[in-house]
Image 1: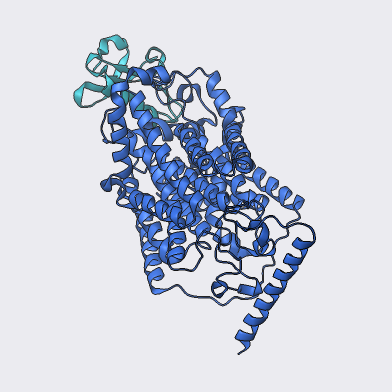
Image 2: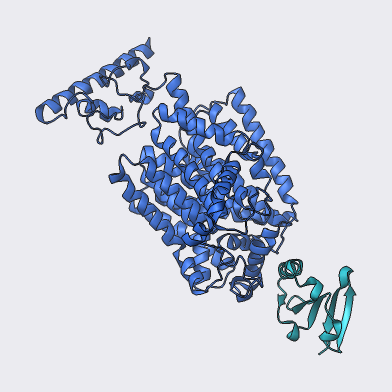
Length: 76
Length: 554
């Protein structure tokens, strides 16, 4: 992600808890100066166990982590 | 971590020291450069507090954060200090002064000095490579510092109500993050590893501030061991240092409290003025700063009960002025309509949880006196306060005991009213231990003063606080440095002007001159009789000087 990028975080049902919130907050600190925006308008998305199909047809998965954590890019 | 980043931090902290020196010049001045060297720690902490106050105000009014703002906020207090110094007709001391004979430290002192140096060397190495792993650090403090560094302002998505999804910890003031952001600029990047060296500088500043304030008043054999013990407390070294603001808060409050304690006896205006600046900085470091600052002032009020007419207005003005320094932030935060951040405040919330009262008190006492946390320091402080009380140092002793009591009460209230805090000392479930860092460091800073008073009283170097029948009683214990009589209890108890029948008073030159007035047995001097008794005592002083000079010549 470029330094001026905006990204979104989508938490799936398994991550919709304190762990997921803490993870999202850590990304907010770690990825600065990139800033978090609403996932619908974000070019870059972190998906914590979410349903990828909800991210649209153009979503391209760039990396897959453990526990169904994905990082990808939404095609314009 | 690079040498360039470390060099940048060194430059920044020298700048902060310069800012504080400017403030100190305005408040106090110095008659010799060695005096500035002695008070360098106080000057440094004054610089930190001044910078935090002005940077916070600048951010609140919307000025863009960056090196020019940091420079401006630093030069402002320096200019103010110079103007104040000029108004008070202060002059810089000459660079070259008559060389004084240097007296080396004793063996015991040298051992403790070496231990302190080793401590700071080890602390530097650990901080230089410390990771930013603590939740509090990145969740609250460093994220704000990075935002200020990258976006030059308080962005709504980090500082506003929408931040942190749950609306948590947004109402913490930006004073310390602003200093951290200034460090990023000084280092040339958002280097969150080297950033931790800030704590090394802060700790060094605090240690030198305590040592500098107490060195002329406390013998090194008492001061240095307590100082070393204070630095290695498990409760202090055990809390995660990187990123948090507990240490800066503790350093500012403890130094302010020490200045207030010194003021209780010496009544020098600069001591309260410097304490005001430090308290203002503490109020902008953490929300708890307000509560702990109130504890300091309540303890000071309690210890000045006897002369409340003269002391309380000044202490009240100190509290109001310190609060005023933090007011812009509080107004801004109030306008943001921050959520209550899960805090259950108010009398009702406390009353509803009455069953938590006793366990909370028990927890607060364990947090205060736990050996695993603070070794024997709080117990030593209590014993020193009792010894000090019976040795004539009543105000510092009452201050220490009252401050401990109020701090325990405050910590009890926090756990009592906030039901989501567990009744445990576990750092991750209850902040009781971290809260106690400040009170323990505060009483630790005052302890050497109390021990010194107790020591001098026990060894007979100073007279009992009970006034002797004649002010000249115990002449054999008089010391005449530089020809001026230095009396055993000088500055220890009530001043001569405040002396009344049946009450002890200060045994200084003034007391000698108006001994009748201060005497518990005689009535006030007046008219011709007063002039005669003054003249008689002046003759006695001259006689003493002559006798001493004769002794020397022999």
